Length: 129
Image (cartoon, rainbow, N blue to C red; front, top):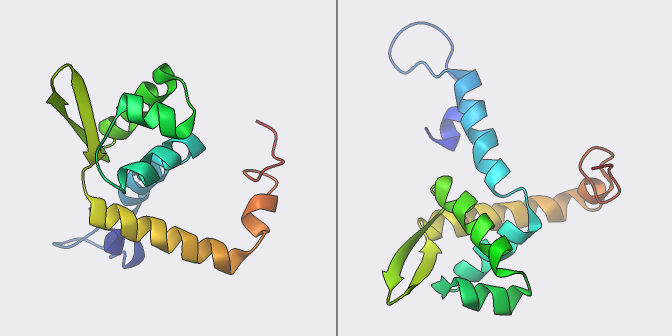
């Protein structure tokens, strides 16, 4: 399923028909993977190259259990992968180019919306958790 499927939704029977509800649900799952600031920080560090959990904990100032939990979430979403190196695992982005494209697009959109996102009553910085 591609983002194009989210933009150019075809309605009607036959080949090429996109189930809009399913496409949007999958996209929501993807964005949920990026919905936590710690996960975004991890993704940004992995954009620089491979890291071990211990490296990420040092760079981000997060607990090992927190980093491991977020890496598991990102791995379950197919956004990161790991490979064993000795007794440690080294993590990297599964699709670094596409991930960087998405983060760049998000930065562009954020620059266009100004403070609107931060001030959003539902999800902004002052929203009730």
